[in-house]
Amino acid sequence: MADSFIADLHIHSPYAFACSKALTLDNLAEWARRKGIDLLATGDFTHPQWAANLRSQLARDEDGLYGYGGVRFVPGTEISCVYRQDGRSRRIHMLVLMPTLEAAAGLTRRLTQYGNLENDGRPTVALSARDLMALALDCHPAAIVIPAHAWTPWFGVYGSKSGFDRLEECFGDLTPLITAVESGLSSDPAMNWAVPELDTRSIVSFSDAHSLGRLGREVTALSGPLSWAGLSDALRNDGIAYTVEFYPEEGKYHYSGHRKCGVAYGSAALEQNGTQCPVCGRTLTLGVLHRVARLADRPIRDDLRPDAAGFIRTGTRRPPFARLIPLQEIIAAVHGVGVNTRTVMREYIKITDQIGGELDALLRASAADLRPAAGDATAQAIMQARAGRVSIAPGYDGKYGSVSLLTDALNSQPTLLEC
Image (tube, rainbow, N blue to C red; front, side, top):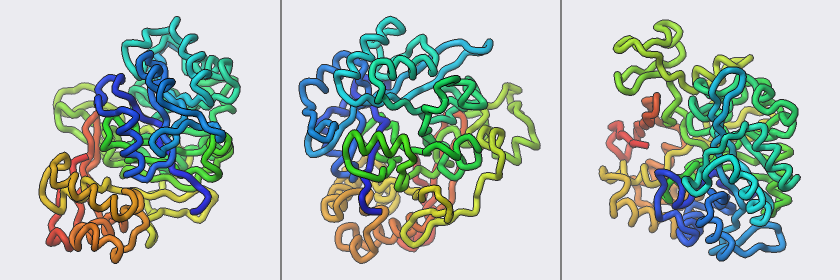
């Protein structure tokens, strides 16, 4: 999979609600290198203070991207569109990528009349998703707009709470310009491939990182040169080399359910029991699995298994993808400690220093390469995670799922990895 670069184009800054104050450019660059990410979106370019930081610290290169700390950046942000359409309240999150910081500043100025941009790095604007797209393109015709985490119940373009059944219902005449859709943590490419109108669109995956450790938990490898032109061409013309995914069951909206009452339903159980909570009688939050199945014209493939390299391939024109467990969670399981402990961070730094990055360790390094850096137990756990030897308790109604990793290194006992 040569001639491609790894991109994470959905992240946040210290100025976004519920996000870490450690998301500085210095730290983002350091963690991107350690994760194995070549290109990051800046995140939150509409926030005045973060935008000032970007202007003062990022340097634009001849390739049309911005450089900092050995990592490339592209101006990008997530915007929450809140509006009414067809008698319903709509809340749609959109990713916007602009070719220059000047173009990003122009869009920011236009958006000030629709919302308070200083309140949150992920601003809420009283503007439809279609009109936001039109505004971005008016500011610069090369702007790229992507529906964010498309299936999330409350904020996805297909979401069960406030979304649409078809892209055209949302974007109208601009629908042909939607060339990529972000899958989100609760779905993966195989689920999206069941929906016919996505046949002609790229399925991309990004982290939506609110902290440094979450950076790169989902990424997309794009074919072509690492440049603005390469990025734009790949996103507009299905130039996806591969994606790296969460297990979709780990996402906090995969199943339908009611977290307060501890009720979680997969497709069969929902069909049998209905959409009302059997404990309190309230309507369940209808999850991504149910929503995809409702809009699909073909079965969701559940027979896909990773090959020896850890990739799931369909033999069609669709790009391969890999489902991974983050390295810090694997280390924590092996040592029987919490993810955010010094033991885990010490081992994580050692492994990524010696192997060359987290994605290399999880996807490319052999067991023989891993053992000197990671030790026998962690190396074995990584190889078994790569092979998909896991059991999963799916997430629902805002509660993350959990993964049980069964490895010889853990004495064949399931170990819970909290996401």
